[in-house]
Amino acid sequence: MLDHIGIPVSDYARSKAFYDQALAPLGIGLIMEVTPEQTDDGSSAAGFGAQGKPFFWIGSSDTAGRTHTAFVASSRAVVDAFHRSALLAGGRDNGAPGLRPRYHENYYGAFVLDPDGHNIEAVCHLPQG
Image (tube, rainbow, N blue to C red; front, side):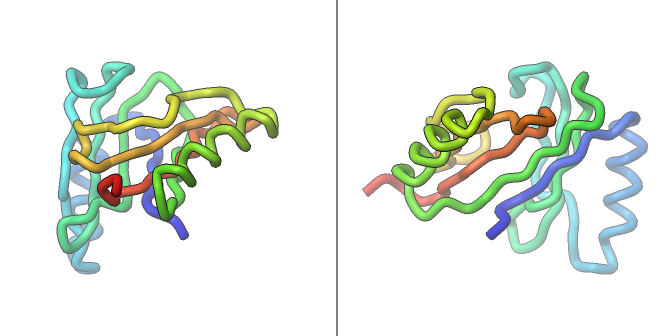
């Protein structure tokens, strides 16, 4: 199951305003914004969603054309297994398994680049236990 997707945009402010207005009739709004200071690459990102959960992200980035797809993992061990398996399959590391508290305290994810450079993630939102 998909957890969230992200797409790069050429004009962050214009795109954020567009999606904020265009998605409103669907009950989807801006849930979270990540500043350049909070990202590893100095980009901005806006997460749109519903009921407090962002599931569609836009972002300014140097990696024009690269998409981001995150898959739901049932546990942190599954995130770890995904990362190992993806690297063995020829993916390139784009973020080892670990907590990403800037998103929320239990956000545990791992990132790889697929053969075409797309950012693929597995994420578990559950507390370790």
